[in-house]
Image (cartoon, rainbow, N blue to C red):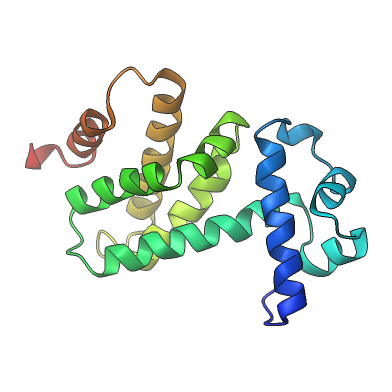
Length: 170
């Protein structure tokens, strides 16, 4: 994935990312190939491969930015389960189009990978990578299940999730 600062490359990168999420709204991820993506972005295959190794990296690039913002927001607040869960679902609301595109295309694994990195960086549960991974995977799985059902409001979902992850606080 391109990490440089060349304005032309950054513009092409952003065009490819925008094209990916525009396509995901109408086309299943499994049907999006590099040719379709580059045609939609109006860039060459050579440009695509100069910036990304594959389609997943396109999505990964956007998710890294979102989860970086989530992590920065968490760093400003006390790291409690309530804050962690509430902010996670607030970020879902803020970035619902992005998250819903991924959930609709069964790409929860990409959300989980990014959530895990974020939780690990927060050093939850006294450096226990298993606890961080459990919380990250739990949050993304609950979001995925709720996305399919939407049988309760988001506020209730936050309270339910918090009670599952921190039953002593309820």
